[in-house]
Image (cartoon, rainbow, N blue to C red; front, side, top):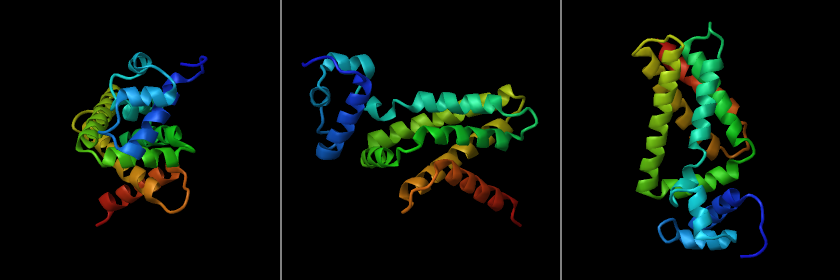
Length: 188
């Protein structure tokens, strides 16, 4: 190991994503990730529980942002508008990072175990949004339905953003996706 360098966590995440892209997720070891980052395996495990978590480390931050946005929405906001505020807040996490997210999604999409993990994280997000809506006084089943709709909008909007041929603002794509959902539910 050479001289100390800052941002061990970020270097590990970058090294992991590079190696997953080069060798494949299953063929990449924690030792290889640590070596590519110029760190030790011990350092890796101080930052991540396992090699999957490198891909999902931002989930807690995303969930916290969404819950805070729902809680901070105006008291007069309809449940769907409170969730729209959460989508707007979540979009900011991905500003300028579309290429990185595309590489991450390619790795996640190619492994059943990782796709399942992503679904579990999205289910946790839906549960947290529903709890935040209940805390605003939204009764069941409206709180859970609205939270699940919000996660559906997030998934569809996120996929549209990633596959768009042009660079687009994720927040705008989320607003458009939510508007389409409203059109579908309100059309005769």
